[in-house]
Image (cartoon, rainbow, N blue to C red; front, side, top):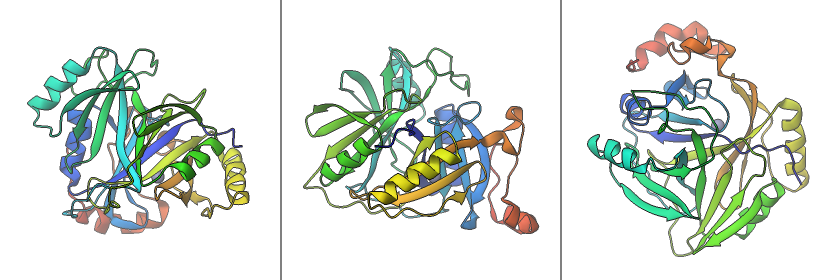
Length: 310
Ligand code: ZN
């Protein structure tokens, strides 16, 4: 069994409008934009990262805004809900705030004993705030959101799956522990993780497969401390029969990817070197950062991207 995974690292989704996406995550939700770069495989598209002050693992929501991309159709074989952690007793504040800003899909209930506020991102993204009494992570205070209500980072994610058995086995192998069942949803928790520790598996045998598009999660990344641990994780996965990519340099972390039996694309990403690798913590996310191989084409790349608001 793998012992080096610490919970989530980041979640990467797709969007149809960069400015709208930037506004929603920095203003409406109050996260910090910690990096403004491009899709390393397609530099005509931004890659935007939103998280806490430094973009700690377990707090980072990232987006590829493909301008005017068609909306995805939710279904099985994907991450159906990305969940952020907020302090206990704050859903009233968030309900009022999101309602006032015209956010769609607001719905309150409880999951595994915790209060949940579900809502949609600008492209129908499946998002939720989950109350937690004991999340000690320091929040980023964006757009006047007070310290005692602000988002702490991810709580976790809920996968929508046709059937859950193979994914349950994989999560167990990755170090997650089964922690209960509620209706059709099975909960897994990473003991001693980074705070973004829960994965819920929803079994939806009658639901059609998702069609990926704007608002869909592209992949979900799990955190390891460093490259050495990542190589151990890669070997363990490959020895178990998973087809894992070689290690890829993403400038702010090192990444490996593999497709899981339920259809969800997994990544394992390192906590090193981090988002302050190429700009000071005080100014993270302010300037467009390009990987070295695109630096020579900066003028052309910048001319193709819509400017974001600060
Ligand atoms: Zn990723």
